[in-house]
Length: 183
Image (cartoon, rainbow, N blue to C red; front, side, top):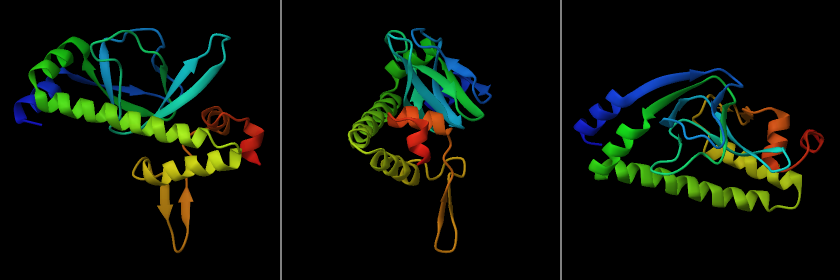
């Protein structure tokens, strides 16, 4: 991004810190900021009409959340681990977005990446066996989350994978039950 755009972003950014389990933004509200994950892991959670909650995705370093130029959030965002978010004030960010084609392109690419990940996730969730969905999730951890919070540690001929969410959350994410994940 051009230096002037970076300076403007720094001016309108305010760092926010969240502890594990803390709500970052509620479903249905229109937060006054657009968030970019600086560190940690956040989960996106959807509440169904019958009151059940379903985890629909994880956000890691570099991911954006919030609705630019449009309505309320359709998911809640909660910290899975201690996290820091760069919160860009909505109105100034939208104004800068209109003036900066380079920033507009970065945001568009971020949205397209999220769409690609959602399509990949649909393939994983379409697998009939929990074992296959879990394998797909582990593949995502080993690729997309490799540089995040020390999720992967390579040893002599082995790879240790730290799953950054609880077994219950993983079951919700994979459309399963915690007991199935344990097996």
